[in-house]
Image 1 (cartoon, rainbow, N blue to C red):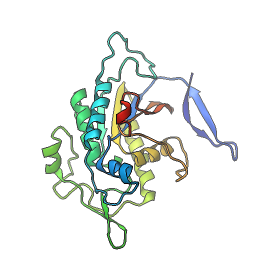
Image 2 (cartoon, rainbow, N blue to C red; image 1 turned 45 degrees about the vertical axis):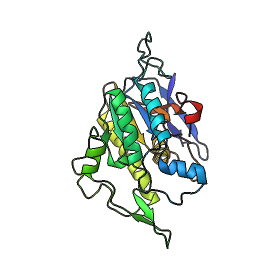
Image 3 (tube, rainbow, N blue to C red; image 1 turned 90 degrees about the horizontal axis):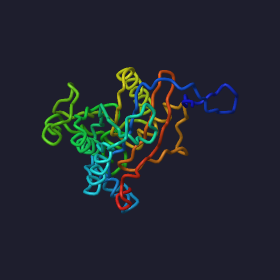
Length: 266
């Protein structure tokens, strides 16, 4: 058994998947896309982002998706003994850490998961969706950066959320619209954080974030060029599992959503 380390570019013009010998797992990492937001529902209904919210909440359907995911993650699977290598999580998830984006659709999803798992979600600035918090200028169509929510808003609506110490009342974004070249840098910073913070032990870490950021993260992890012609689909409230080892990483599964009933898949 081997572990996918990345892309071997030693042969000109040829990309090889390189395997490394099986070794002790450092961390199981679960990327979770937020449940359906108001903007997701708007685009699904109209095929357009016209009228989008800069920082949308979950829809009722999205809250139901998050509830199904929470139940799935918290399920104890009676009779299933814990296994050292369990690629389908037959013995459960036993998550130890839960991180989230500060965007409301992610924070709301994480709050539902945290309540079911007995974990307080920790908010990270680096894992927001590409672009940040912005609205489109009605005349020019150009994106204009907005402040984002402040500390008291999160304290009132998501009291279990662990907020960064620097967050005040003037909002967490407070800058122009993010440019495309800035997103890969954030993705690499998060990977560095994950490896440094969870380098040893048996941590099982989940992150609630966004589809765009997910694509940049996979490209950074597996040394792939980011291109508009390459897209890793991730449904609302879907799971991807990546196992990190001392010298590599394994994409165990991608876009798992079999715990959602058909009518809740978006």
